[in-house]
Length: 391
Image 1: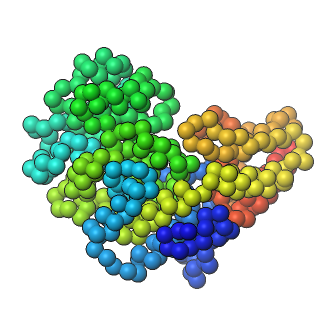
Image 2: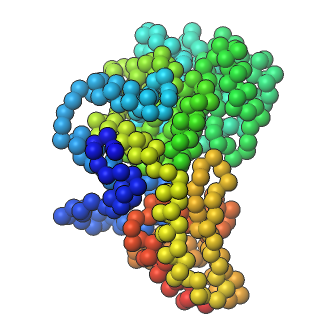
């Protein structure tokens, strides 16, 4: 049973049947063109579809006012209990979690230092990061004024850790692997007395990975709320040590002069994130896969008779258990390049986006994570029309 007494996660209502639509077509009025997302929960495409229970919770919070600090505390306590963490807070996204967590480790609750940021004079301001863990979003580590110190081995960590080291950072998963594995890295941090932070933003689904991540023992770990957990797009989770979470909260809104003053979380997002996690943890991997396999079967059925075309469903080989539909064709029979196929999908009405070639190894792959009821049939018909036109 959900927090608000809604339908169970395995019911038809919970499995993505949308609520009654609005009376106005707002996007049409604005001249904005919707598209069918067969790509996945990319930020540029608005993240994942929120579950109906999440939308219900956000509507509930939108029409009722409570004190923000009281709601923040209650939601954090509930989430911490659900995932087995000492403490928890909802943030305005995983990047905000990194900023707030880093600031917490740099200042450790010192009010004067908190107000001094991003000026780091006479305070801890170095973040140890594995060279192979450098990535696009590590700029969030420097927002509060920190500098990054790259390492490649245990000896590097020992040599470069000093009284200016505020935190050790770990990324999960990485494209390049680890020089120092998670458990060894955590042990080193504990031995050296340095807080250890993990960015695990993209490691869901399944939602149980949040619980497993907490068990690993990082002092702080963060997750995106608007992707695999299917919560509010602009929300995230920061979990871990109760003191560090308390310091992170003081760095966030509504506290004045805090480094994260602009990283506000609304009451709708607090409650929506809680319900998103609650429902995600109650949905089994089998239920999730069954929904997606059904979507893919409806697409495959419409193209299976086209000569030279093949389709297969596969599971990603990563910490996230995700299903994709891989579509291929003999270019001697279907005279169409992969790039031109994507262009045809984009220019169609309705427009369709599929998995980026950067992430698919140059292959044509679809995700059902963000597709709603009936959109699979539309996508299948569009793909069939395009492939037949070039056959």
